[in-house]
Image (tube, rainbow, N blue to C red):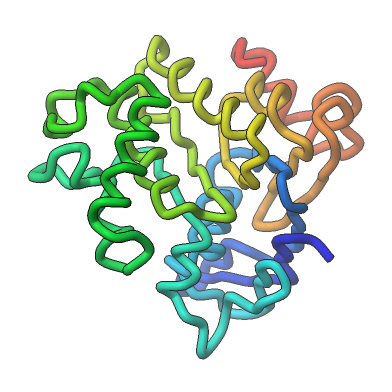
Amino acid sequence: MAFLEIEGIRKSYGAHEVLRGLELTVDQHQVVTLIGASGCGKSTLLRCVNALETIDAGRIVLDGDPVSGRGVDVDRLRRDVGIVFQHYNLFPHMDVLHNITLAPTVLGVLGEEEAEERAMELLRRIGLADKAKALPDRLSGGQQQRVAIVRALAMRPRLLLLDEITSALDPELVAEVLNIVRDLAEDGMTMLLATHEMGFAKEVAHQVCFLHQGTVLEQGPPEQIFGDPREERTKAFLRRIVEAGRL
């Protein structure tokens, strides 16, 4: 049994069906990357896994427990499943330390002292311990995104979702964020991430999923997807990526 099982999920907004019976599995300690053109359903899929969106059909199972549909404990789900967005969504009126400790303390995951110790440990790990008392607007975009990742990690999630976390960054700041994700992958964090950084996906992923029109059209190890894709749509997408100098 896979750690995360996504079984035939559908999601529509009005008449527009974004996810069309999508199937996907993620094993524990595996990094799975989602690639595909804008509008193919990557972000919606991640939001459904974290119950930020409700699904219309199908089911999502985490470590054997259903986490979609009626009766799901959303607070418990979000303790187990962290998510980081392309826009950092830090609270502008709270300093870095408070941004990180708020959720663990409010949800009772950690006591206040333990939450602060955990936050400082994580900030030291990413080289931002000296920014603990700074407000977000005093940080660069790359620093804010690193804090957003730490905020998710402070909950000790079993699964981390990353939604185009470098899309809003200047090119020179991308590497410092991707280095953290690379370290997490080496530490065995289970991750499902949507990305336009094809070189990074090729390097860090165990499995790559090409999404097209709300389904996983093709899935395989990076060397197969990037080196010998089988589907014409995948080939066409990767040709455009290569022509744009992004792979």
